[in-house]
Amino acid sequence: MRFFNPQPRSGEERLLWSRDIRYAHRLAALLPACRTVELDAGTVVLGPAAQLTDARAAEIAAEVHSPAYGLVNLDPALPEGERYLAGMAAAVQQSGIAERIGMAPNTQVVQTKTLDYFFNLRNVHQIAFQPIVELATGELYEYECLFRPNMPMLPQSISAIVHAAIDTGRSVELDAFIVRLILERAGALERAGREGGRRPLRLAVNLTPASLLDERFEAKALATMIGDFGLSPRQITVECTEQQAVSDVGPLVRRVKALRRVGFGFAIDDAGAGYASFTLIAALRPSIIKIDREIAYGIARDDAKQALVEAFVSFGRRIGARLVAEGIEKRADLAMLTALGVHLGQGFLIGRPTYEPATPRPMESLRLDAARRRVRDGVGTVVTRRRRTVSAR
Image 1 (tube, helix red, strand yellow):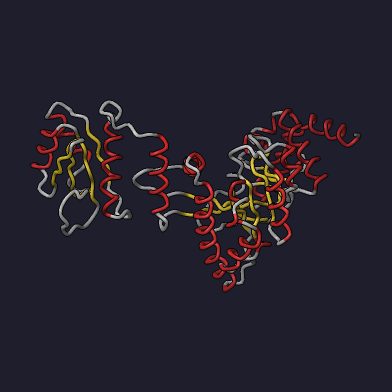
Image 2: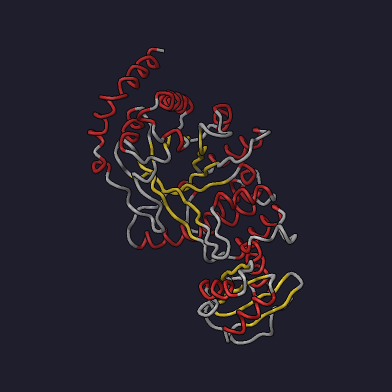
Protein backbone atom coordinates (compact mmCIF):
# COMPACT_ATOMS: atom_id res chain seq x y z
CA MET A 1 0.00 0.00 0.00
CA ARG A 2 1.28 3.45 -0.91
CA PHE A 3 -0.14 6.38 0.99
CA PHE A 4 0.73 8.97 -1.64
CA ASN A 5 2.91 9.53 -4.65
CA PRO A 6 6.56 10.22 -3.87
CA GLN A 7 7.33 13.90 -3.46
CA PRO A 8 10.19 15.85 -1.89
CA ARG A 9 9.88 16.10 1.89
CA SER A 10 11.92 17.71 4.62
CA GLY A 11 11.56 17.90 8.38
CA GLU A 12 9.49 15.79 10.74
CA GLU A 13 6.23 14.30 9.47
CA ARG A 14 3.09 13.48 11.44
CA LEU A 15 0.09 11.28 10.75
CA LEU A 16 -3.47 11.70 11.97
CA TRP A 17 -6.15 9.00 11.68
CA SER A 18 -9.88 9.37 12.20
CA ARG A 19 -13.06 7.51 11.28
CA ASP A 20 -14.72 10.89 10.70
CA ILE A 21 -14.07 11.80 7.05
CA ARG A 22 -15.49 15.33 7.47
CA TYR A 23 -13.07 16.07 10.29
CA ALA A 24 -10.06 14.77 8.36
CA HIS A 25 -10.88 16.76 5.23
CA ARG A 26 -11.68 19.91 7.22
CA LEU A 27 -8.32 19.66 8.96
CA ALA A 28 -6.40 19.07 5.71
CA ALA A 29 -8.20 21.95 3.98
CA LEU A 30 -7.01 24.38 6.67
CA LEU A 31 -3.41 23.12 6.56
CA PRO A 32 -2.04 23.71 3.05
CA ALA A 33 0.94 21.35 3.30
CA CYS A 34 -1.21 18.41 4.48
CA ARG A 35 -2.91 15.76 2.36
CA THR A 36 -5.52 13.09 2.99
CA VAL A 37 -5.67 9.41 2.13
CA GLU A 38 -9.05 7.66 2.34
CA LEU A 39 -8.95 4.03 3.46
CA ASP A 40 -11.63 1.48 4.31
CA ALA A 41 -10.58 1.73 7.96
CA GLY A 42 -10.77 5.53 8.11
CA THR A 43 -9.08 8.64 6.76
CA VAL A 44 -5.42 9.53 7.18
CA VAL A 45 -4.02 13.06 7.19
CA LEU A 46 -0.29 13.42 6.51
CA GLY A 47 1.71 16.58 6.93
CA PRO A 48 4.69 18.40 8.41
CA ALA A 49 4.89 18.43 12.20
CA ALA A 50 5.09 22.23 12.16
CA GLN A 51 1.52 22.39 10.78
CA LEU A 52 -0.11 19.16 11.96
CA THR A 53 0.16 20.01 15.65
CA ASP A 54 -1.74 18.65 18.65
CA ALA A 55 -3.21 22.08 19.31
CA ARG A 56 -4.49 22.50 15.72
CA ALA A 57 -5.95 18.99 15.63
CA ALA A 58 -7.77 19.58 18.94
CA GLU A 59 -9.04 22.99 17.82
CA ILE A 60 -10.63 21.63 14.63
CA ALA A 61 -11.98 18.59 16.48
CA ALA A 62 -13.83 20.91 18.87
CA GLU A 63 -15.44 22.66 15.89
CA VAL A 64 -16.83 19.40 14.44
CA HIS A 65 -18.20 17.80 17.62
CA SER A 66 -14.96 16.21 18.87
CA PRO A 67 -14.51 13.05 16.79
CA ALA A 68 -12.08 10.36 17.98
CA TYR A 69 -8.66 10.58 16.38
CA GLY A 70 -5.03 9.63 16.91
CA LEU A 71 -2.02 11.80 16.02
CA VAL A 72 1.55 10.45 15.98
CA ASN A 73 5.03 11.31 14.74
CA LEU A 74 6.31 9.24 11.81
CA ASP A 75 9.64 7.53 12.32
CA PRO A 76 12.10 8.43 9.53
CA ALA A 77 14.35 5.50 10.57
CA LEU A 78 11.78 3.04 9.20
CA PRO A 79 11.62 2.20 5.48
CA GLU A 80 8.86 4.17 3.74
CA GLY A 81 6.75 1.03 3.21
CA GLU A 82 6.64 0.37 6.95
CA ARG A 83 6.70 3.93 8.21
CA TYR A 84 3.15 4.88 7.30
CA LEU A 85 1.58 1.55 8.21
CA ALA A 86 3.28 1.64 11.62
CA GLY A 87 2.17 5.24 12.08
CA MET A 88 -1.42 4.47 11.18
CA ALA A 89 -1.50 1.47 13.52
CA ALA A 90 -0.16 3.65 16.36
CA ALA A 91 -2.68 6.42 15.59
CA VAL A 92 -5.61 3.96 15.57
CA GLN A 93 -4.56 2.63 18.98
CA GLN A 94 -4.13 6.17 20.29
CA SER A 95 -7.65 7.11 19.18
CA GLY A 96 -9.13 4.89 21.88
CA ILE A 97 -11.70 3.24 19.59
CA ALA A 98 -9.59 0.43 18.12
CA GLU A 99 -11.41 -2.29 20.03
CA ARG A 100 -14.85 -0.86 19.21
CA ILE A 101 -14.15 -0.94 15.45
CA GLY A 102 -12.54 -4.37 15.49
CA MET A 103 -8.94 -3.20 15.18
CA ALA A 104 -7.69 -4.18 18.62
CA PRO A 105 -4.37 -5.97 18.07
CA ASN A 106 -3.59 -9.56 19.02
CA THR A 107 -1.00 -9.51 21.83
CA GLN A 108 1.50 -11.71 20.03
CA VAL A 109 1.09 -9.76 16.79
CA VAL A 110 1.79 -6.55 18.71
CA GLN A 111 4.86 -8.11 20.32
CA THR A 112 6.15 -9.31 16.95
CA LYS A 113 5.67 -5.88 15.36
CA THR A 114 7.28 -4.22 18.39
CA LEU A 115 10.34 -6.46 18.07
CA ASP A 116 10.56 -5.89 14.32
CA TYR A 117 10.54 -2.16 14.96
CA PHE A 118 13.12 -2.58 17.73
CA PHE A 119 15.53 -4.57 15.53
CA ASN A 120 15.13 -2.10 12.69
CA LEU A 121 16.43 0.73 14.88
CA ARG A 122 19.85 -0.81 15.32
CA ASN A 123 21.80 2.45 15.20
CA VAL A 124 19.79 4.48 17.72
CA HIS A 125 19.73 2.27 20.83
CA GLN A 126 22.18 3.08 23.63
CA ILE A 127 24.38 1.24 26.11
CA ALA A 128 24.75 2.50 29.68
CA PHE A 129 27.44 1.46 32.15
CA GLN A 130 26.80 1.15 35.89
CA PRO A 131 29.80 0.67 38.20
CA ILE A 132 30.13 -2.29 40.55
CA VAL A 133 32.58 -1.62 43.38
CA GLU A 134 34.37 -3.34 46.24
CA LEU A 135 32.32 -2.30 49.27
CA ALA A 136 35.29 -2.41 51.65
CA THR A 137 37.46 -0.05 49.60
CA GLY A 138 35.29 1.59 46.95
CA GLU A 139 37.61 0.28 44.24
CA LEU A 140 35.96 -0.26 40.85
CA TYR A 141 35.42 -3.94 40.08
CA GLU A 142 33.54 -3.83 36.75
CA TYR A 143 30.66 -2.16 34.90
CA GLU A 144 27.33 -3.80 34.21
CA CYS A 145 26.25 -3.08 30.62
CA LEU A 146 22.63 -1.92 30.59
CA PHE A 147 20.78 -1.77 27.29
CA ARG A 148 18.58 1.28 26.71
CA PRO A 149 16.08 0.87 23.82
CA ASN A 150 15.31 4.05 21.90
CA MET A 151 11.98 3.67 20.07
CA PRO A 152 10.51 7.11 19.29
CA MET A 153 7.26 5.83 17.79
CA LEU A 154 6.67 3.14 20.42
CA PRO A 155 8.56 3.77 23.68
CA GLN A 156 9.35 0.49 25.48
CA SER A 157 11.37 -0.53 28.52
CA ILE A 158 14.01 -3.21 28.10
CA SER A 159 11.93 -5.41 30.40
CA ALA A 160 8.96 -5.19 28.01
CA ILE A 161 11.22 -6.00 25.06
CA VAL A 162 12.65 -9.05 26.87
CA HIS A 163 9.18 -10.35 27.74
CA ALA A 164 8.01 -9.84 24.15
CA ALA A 165 11.05 -11.79 22.90
CA ILE A 166 10.39 -14.65 25.33
CA ASP A 167 6.67 -14.79 24.48
CA THR A 168 7.39 -14.93 20.73
CA GLY A 169 10.33 -17.33 20.94
CA ARG A 170 12.92 -14.72 19.94
CA SER A 171 14.93 -14.35 23.15
CA VAL A 172 18.13 -15.74 21.60
CA GLU A 173 17.76 -13.39 18.62
CA LEU A 174 17.34 -10.51 21.06
CA ASP A 175 20.40 -11.48 23.11
CA ALA A 176 22.53 -11.87 19.97
CA PHE A 177 21.43 -8.41 18.79
CA ILE A 178 22.10 -6.73 22.15
CA VAL A 179 25.42 -8.47 22.82
CA ARG A 180 26.79 -7.43 19.43
CA LEU A 181 25.85 -3.79 20.05
CA ILE A 182 27.42 -3.93 23.52
CA LEU A 183 30.63 -5.41 22.13
CA GLU A 184 30.82 -2.82 19.36
CA ARG A 185 30.55 -0.05 21.95
CA ALA A 186 32.89 -1.76 24.42
CA GLY A 187 35.47 -2.43 21.71
CA ALA A 188 35.51 1.25 20.74
CA LEU A 189 35.91 2.27 24.39
CA GLU A 190 38.69 -0.27 24.88
CA ARG A 191 40.65 1.06 21.89
CA ALA A 192 40.27 4.63 23.14
CA GLY A 193 41.29 3.54 26.63
CA ARG A 194 44.49 1.89 25.43
CA GLU A 195 45.46 5.05 23.60
CA GLY A 196 44.78 7.06 26.77
CA GLY A 197 46.67 4.67 29.05
CA ARG A 198 43.53 3.50 30.88
CA ARG A 199 43.41 0.01 32.35
CA PRO A 200 41.29 -2.59 30.49
CA LEU A 201 37.56 -2.48 31.05
CA ARG A 202 35.80 -5.24 32.95
CA LEU A 203 32.18 -5.69 31.88
CA ALA A 204 29.13 -7.74 32.88
CA VAL A 205 26.81 -8.80 30.02
CA ASN A 206 23.34 -10.33 30.50
CA LEU A 207 22.16 -13.53 28.79
CA THR A 208 19.11 -15.74 29.30
CA PRO A 209 19.53 -19.50 29.87
CA ALA A 210 18.10 -20.14 26.39
CA SER A 211 20.96 -18.13 24.87
CA LEU A 212 23.58 -19.89 26.98
CA LEU A 213 22.37 -23.14 25.43
CA ASP A 214 22.46 -21.78 21.87
CA GLU A 215 25.47 -22.49 19.64
CA ARG A 216 26.01 -18.78 19.02
CA PHE A 217 26.96 -18.42 22.69
CA GLU A 218 28.96 -21.62 23.07
CA ALA A 219 32.17 -20.81 24.98
CA LYS A 220 34.63 -20.87 22.08
CA ALA A 221 32.22 -19.08 19.72
CA LEU A 222 31.61 -16.36 22.31
CA ALA A 223 35.34 -16.02 23.00
CA THR A 224 35.98 -15.62 19.26
CA MET A 225 33.24 -13.00 18.95
CA ILE A 226 34.66 -11.04 21.88
CA GLY A 227 38.16 -11.29 20.45
CA ASP A 228 36.91 -9.78 17.18
CA PHE A 229 36.18 -6.59 19.13
CA GLY A 230 39.57 -6.48 20.83
CA LEU A 231 38.39 -7.87 24.16
CA SER A 232 39.36 -10.91 26.22
CA PRO A 233 37.04 -13.42 27.98
CA ARG A 234 38.77 -12.45 31.24
CA GLN A 235 37.27 -8.98 30.87
CA ILE A 236 33.71 -10.34 30.68
CA THR A 237 31.30 -11.65 33.30
CA VAL A 238 28.31 -13.43 31.78
CA GLU A 239 25.23 -12.76 33.91
CA CYS A 240 22.47 -15.34 33.70
CA THR A 241 19.23 -13.34 33.82
CA GLU A 242 16.60 -15.97 34.40
CA GLN A 243 13.09 -15.16 33.23
CA GLN A 244 11.80 -18.73 33.07
CA ALA A 245 12.39 -21.88 35.10
CA VAL A 246 15.17 -24.19 33.88
CA SER A 247 13.70 -27.68 33.44
CA ASP A 248 17.00 -29.50 32.79
CA VAL A 249 20.00 -28.01 34.57
CA GLY A 250 22.56 -30.50 33.19
CA PRO A 251 23.18 -28.91 29.75
CA LEU A 252 23.35 -25.47 31.36
CA VAL A 253 25.92 -26.69 33.89
CA ARG A 254 28.12 -28.00 31.06
CA ARG A 255 27.88 -24.70 29.16
CA VAL A 256 28.77 -22.69 32.27
CA LYS A 257 31.80 -24.91 33.00
CA ALA A 258 33.01 -24.38 29.42
CA LEU A 259 32.65 -20.61 29.81
CA ARG A 260 34.65 -20.66 33.03
CA ARG A 261 37.40 -22.79 31.40
CA VAL A 262 38.06 -20.23 28.67
CA GLY A 263 38.23 -17.37 31.20
CA PHE A 264 34.74 -15.87 31.48
CA GLY A 265 33.30 -14.96 34.85
CA PHE A 266 29.80 -16.23 35.48
CA ALA A 267 27.11 -14.60 37.62
CA ILE A 268 23.63 -15.58 38.73
CA ASP A 269 21.42 -12.50 38.73
CA ASP A 270 18.52 -11.70 41.09
CA ALA A 271 19.41 -14.33 43.69
CA GLY A 272 16.66 -14.61 46.27
CA ALA A 273 13.92 -13.81 43.76
CA GLY A 274 12.09 -15.80 41.10
CA TYR A 275 13.80 -18.95 39.87
CA ALA A 276 17.32 -18.16 41.11
CA SER A 277 17.16 -20.68 43.96
CA PHE A 278 19.92 -22.08 46.17
CA THR A 279 19.59 -25.41 44.31
CA LEU A 280 20.18 -23.84 40.89
CA ILE A 281 23.03 -21.68 42.17
CA ALA A 282 24.69 -24.71 43.79
CA ALA A 283 24.46 -26.63 40.50
CA LEU A 284 25.91 -23.81 38.38
CA ARG A 285 28.60 -22.75 40.92
CA PRO A 286 28.91 -19.14 39.71
CA SER A 287 31.87 -16.89 40.43
CA ILE A 288 29.40 -14.10 41.31
CA ILE A 289 26.02 -14.18 43.07
CA LYS A 290 23.96 -11.00 42.61
CA ILE A 291 21.49 -10.42 45.42
CA ASP A 292 18.14 -9.13 44.20
CA ARG A 293 17.61 -5.39 44.72
CA GLU A 294 14.41 -5.97 46.67
CA ILE A 295 16.45 -7.75 49.32
CA ALA A 296 19.11 -5.06 49.52
CA TYR A 297 16.60 -2.20 49.72
CA GLY A 298 15.73 -1.38 53.33
CA ILE A 299 17.92 -4.14 54.74
CA ALA A 300 19.23 -1.89 57.53
CA ARG A 301 15.88 -2.18 59.29
CA ASP A 302 14.73 -5.64 58.25
CA ASP A 303 15.87 -8.65 60.31
CA ALA A 304 14.53 -11.18 57.81
CA LYS A 305 16.47 -9.64 54.91
CA GLN A 306 19.61 -9.55 57.05
CA ALA A 307 19.23 -13.26 57.83
CA LEU A 308 18.77 -14.09 54.14
CA VAL A 309 21.89 -12.15 53.13
CA GLU A 310 23.89 -13.85 55.89
CA ALA A 311 22.80 -17.18 54.42
CA PHE A 312 23.97 -16.07 50.96
CA VAL A 313 27.31 -14.88 52.38
CA SER A 314 27.87 -18.26 54.03
CA PHE A 315 26.70 -20.11 50.94
CA GLY A 316 28.92 -18.05 48.64
CA ARG A 317 31.92 -18.66 50.87
CA ARG A 318 31.38 -22.43 50.65
CA ILE A 319 31.19 -22.51 46.82
CA GLY A 320 33.86 -19.85 46.24
CA ALA A 321 31.50 -17.14 44.92
CA ARG A 322 31.58 -13.41 45.63
CA LEU A 323 28.35 -11.52 46.40
CA VAL A 324 27.07 -8.37 44.72
CA ALA A 325 24.24 -6.37 46.28
CA GLU A 326 22.16 -4.58 43.65
CA GLY A 327 20.02 -1.48 44.04
CA ILE A 328 21.91 0.19 46.91
CA GLU A 329 20.29 3.58 47.43
CA LYS A 330 20.65 4.34 51.14
CA ARG A 331 23.78 4.79 53.24
CA ALA A 332 22.38 2.74 56.11
CA ASP A 333 21.75 -0.18 53.72
CA LEU A 334 25.27 0.16 52.34
CA ALA A 335 26.70 0.04 55.84
CA MET A 336 24.61 -3.00 56.78
CA LEU A 337 25.54 -4.93 53.62
CA THR A 338 29.21 -4.20 54.24
CA ALA A 339 28.92 -5.32 57.86
CA LEU A 340 27.21 -8.54 56.77
CA GLY A 341 30.20 -9.43 54.57
CA VAL A 342 28.86 -8.64 51.09
CA HIS A 343 31.87 -8.09 48.85
CA LEU A 344 30.56 -5.94 46.00
CA GLY A 345 27.76 -3.45 45.38
CA GLN A 346 26.03 -1.33 42.79
CA GLY A 347 23.20 1.16 42.89
CA PHE A 348 22.33 4.84 42.54
CA LEU A 349 24.13 5.67 45.80
CA ILE A 350 27.41 4.35 44.36
CA GLY A 351 27.02 5.38 40.73
CA ARG A 352 24.19 5.82 38.26
CA PRO A 353 24.23 4.27 34.77
CA THR A 354 25.98 6.58 32.30
CA TYR A 355 26.65 6.36 28.57
CA GLU A 356 30.37 6.75 29.17
CA PRO A 357 31.91 4.59 31.94
CA ALA A 358 32.13 6.95 34.92
CA THR A 359 34.10 6.84 38.15
CA PRO A 360 31.97 5.67 41.11
CA ARG A 361 31.49 7.93 44.12
CA PRO A 362 34.40 7.78 46.59
CA MET A 363 33.47 5.50 49.44
CA GLU A 364 34.71 7.97 52.04
CA SER A 365 32.17 10.53 50.78
CA LEU A 366 29.37 8.18 51.81
CA ARG A 367 30.40 8.44 55.48
CA LEU A 368 30.33 4.73 56.06
CA ASP A 369 31.61 5.04 59.61
CA ALA A 370 28.75 7.33 60.63
CA ALA A 371 26.24 5.04 58.90
CA ARG A 372 27.67 2.03 60.72
CA ARG A 373 27.29 3.82 64.04
CA ARG A 374 23.64 4.64 63.30
CA VAL A 375 22.94 1.03 62.32
CA ARG A 376 24.83 -0.33 65.36
CA ASP A 377 22.89 1.94 67.69
CA GLY A 378 19.62 0.83 66.12
CA VAL A 379 19.23 -2.59 64.53
CA GLY A 380 22.89 -3.51 64.24
CA THR A 381 22.96 -5.48 67.51
CA VAL A 382 20.64 -8.02 65.92
CA VAL A 383 23.18 -8.59 63.14
CA THR A 384 26.08 -8.96 65.56
CA ARG A 385 24.20 -11.48 67.68
CA ARG A 386 23.11 -13.50 64.65
CA ARG A 387 26.63 -13.51 63.19
CA ARG A 388 28.01 -14.92 66.47
CA THR A 389 25.39 -17.68 66.30
CA VAL A 390 26.33 -18.52 62.71
CA SER A 391 30.03 -18.56 63.62
CA ALA A 392 29.38 -20.89 66.54
CA ARG A 393 27.76 -23.37 64.20
